Amino acid sequence: MLYIASIWPTGQTGVVAAASLFTAAAVIESGLLSGLYVYTISSLLGMLLIPNRASALLYVLFFGFYPIVKSLIERLDGRVLRWVLKLFVFNAALTVIWLFLKELIFDLGSSAPGALIVFVGGSIVFSLFDYGLTKLIWLYINRVSRFTGKRK
Image 1 (tube, rainbow, N blue to C red):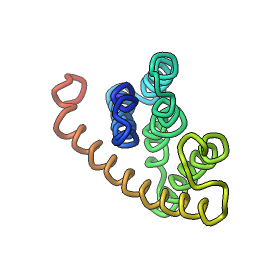
Image 2: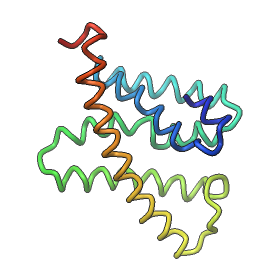
Image 3: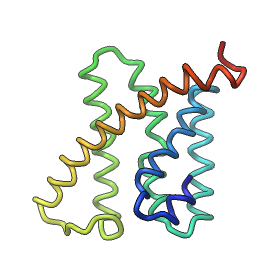
């Protein structure tokens, strides 16, 4: 998936986001440690083998580890607390991306209005991504996982 994202620049972020499903599947099937292994190994391979490092960096800095963090956060009580923590994790990752990779990914300069647009817009898009990921995880658990032989 990361290689496809590197050669298909118009759908890069969407394909990298779809790659997070592999980490989520590993967490569902075998637990958090397996998800961490999938994230770590795919991140290393992505950084070593993929010609377009922007795709691999998006995966390393957010999309790869988010399913692991999501699994931990969703074990907590309180919908508001879960959303606050998810948005915090997203905005922390976006801050790292903004500070170190803005020339590579963003073309808005370092102005305050540009940053505000990126962070507010990013939080809205992230909320849609999280909702979609939740639905895809539900679909995986209820339709696909039963054929893997691990879940009954």
